[in-house]
Every structure is written in structure tokens, then in C-alpha cells.
Length: 187
Image 1: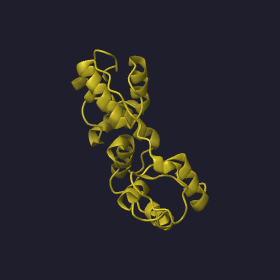
Image 2 (image 1 turned 90 degrees about the vertical axis):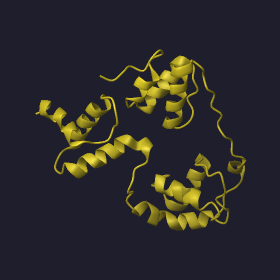
Image 3 (image 1 turned 30 degrees about the vertical axis):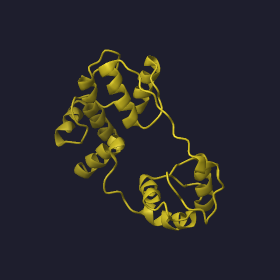
Image 4 (image 1 turned 60 degrees about the horizontal axis):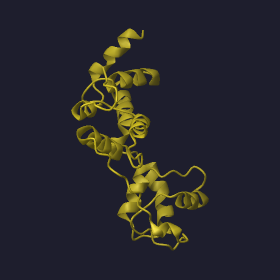
């Protein structure tokens, strides 16, 4: 059974289980820890706290470039940020369906010397490509994709039941055929 996230939990035990970002944030709030950053940042902060009792601070990086006007000829620059201002710019030029997809974020970082015009031109091709690998922070998405690759004809309800079972167990959160054992109790 998954360990409850609470003060005094051994960090090794904490690392064995999957916790939703919302659970991590809730714990951080209860313990007075900073709640900013990615899930990976929260995990590191919690492990440090569980090991030492020390509360690490989180400093949000302020990018002065975000104050500047964005035009089609503006260079993307570094560090690449995904502000509301930039989202609005891309939505204006690409439509309301625009999303900062991981592949597009990667393209922006790898092409920071290019202009926003070039980014707009590249966007449709980038989002049309299926990702080969889902980044680590999207463990749920990876699990569901792998579940369906191995189980044609099963339902999303089945996939979610297996995911819930898997994340309650210690160890990794990758799909395995043996996770289907939980479905025997459903039908």
C-alpha cells in the first residue's frame, strides 16, 4: 500500500511511490515549503525536507525579456519562457487551439536564435509529429499509451484502473502485462 505523504516519512519510502503534483503541493503547503516549480522540483524539495527537516527556498526567475514587445521579427532569445504574453501572441497568429506542446517548447529552446515568424511557420509541422518518447514528468501519459499499445480493445476505464493499481505499488510506474491482474476484480 502506498505510504501517506506526511512529515516523518522516510525519503526512501517516499521515492518508491507516485504522487500527484497536487498532493505534493498540498504537503508543501502544510509543511510551509515553497510550492513553485515543476513536479521534479517539488519531489527534490520534499526529499531534502524529509531527510534534513530543512526548508529549501524557491526563487522564481524573472525574465526581463518578457517585458519587451514581441513582433514577428523578434528573436526568440534565451532563456525561453512561456508567459501569458507569449501564449497570447502565438494564439493570435496560430489560432485559439494553440498549445505550448513539449515538442514546440523543445524547438524554441533549440532555435533561440530564430524569430517568432520562424517559430510560427514551424509550429504546424512540429505538432503534427507524434512524440516518440513522453518526458518523465508525464508518467501517467506514458503508462496509458503503453497500456493501449499492448491491449487493443481495452477501455480507458481499464487503463485507469491499472494505472491506479500501479501507482499504489512501490517501484517504477511503467506499464507491465502483470498490471492487468487488477482487472480480474472488475468483471
